[in-house]
Length: 256
Figure 1 (spheres, rainbow, N blue to C red):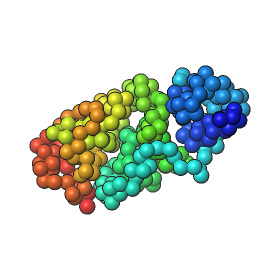
Figure 2: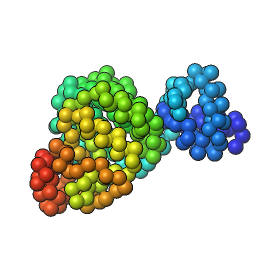
Figure 3: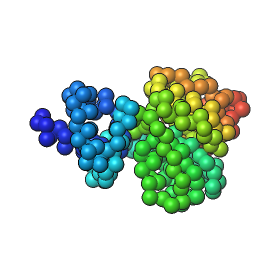
């Protein structure tokens, strides 16, 4: 790849994502991190980016014609009806002027879409969710720091956890990779660490999980089901799992 081509592609990637880490950019463009740093210095001299420790933030116009490169985009069409109903049911748990924390995920993304008209303070580590509220005067939006995990479009790492230390949302809306034998799991260690901090700082924890998540085990243990206050799922959730949720002392909301 010619230098001009590489620099154009770098600019294109950053315009799509808004924020990225040097390691991801280095891997995608198949060059060293020192080369990426030099390219970023050029963009910074043009006022297009701001360098951070290990990463870069895009300051120019966001690309709107290029699809987001997040893996969850392909999952937006999976269990669509169930996720939409769960989002509508979960919206009833949100009151105007509350401070809520939205975890990254396709079901929490659907919930975010239903909140556009409400006056809220919203904290999130999800770039796709943040995108929904960029020009919304009803919402005070707080995007956590951290390094971008492009696969899911979320910000992860110690910066997220450090920032959450000073925040105390009323409700956390959480998504997971699976629930098995009373244990919640997710796919990534850094993601789980961020979510555990979110849970620690929140007054109420609401799990949004369609029925296909139950009986599934993922890579990293997040918490036990009895650490959740409310579970919102769909009508296809088998009775054995409904009873398991109630036995843990959780409130169960079935979306209809």
